[in-house]
Length: 124
Image 1 (cartoon, rainbow, N blue to C red):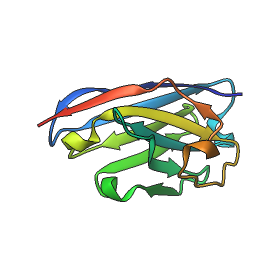
Image 2 (cartoon, rainbow, N blue to C red; image 1 turned 135 degrees about the vertical axis):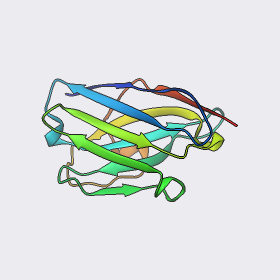
Image 3 (cartoon, rainbow, N blue to C red; image 1 turned 30 degrees about the vertical axis):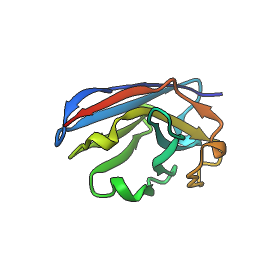
């Protein structure tokens, strides 16, 4: 199994940037497809971005051009660079791992391992 720990969240003004990190332990991230999800109060958890073992990535429409997912397999870490943040980006952000490293899942049930989440708050 793999254990995931997110970091990098915080409070930022609209238009600002944050970089989230997801550090893995237990197994190499090279074995997994990785994703970021987010959940705002009272809402369902929603897909943000995913990256295959190969480095191919996909994004939720509302974050395209603003967010970038990347992975450093040597450091066993996945990142989410978030630019031009908007108040509607406010949520708890979760890192997730899928056994199927070639997958591109966009629903939470496709991922077997989750971090504890990190809060991102964007003020207007």
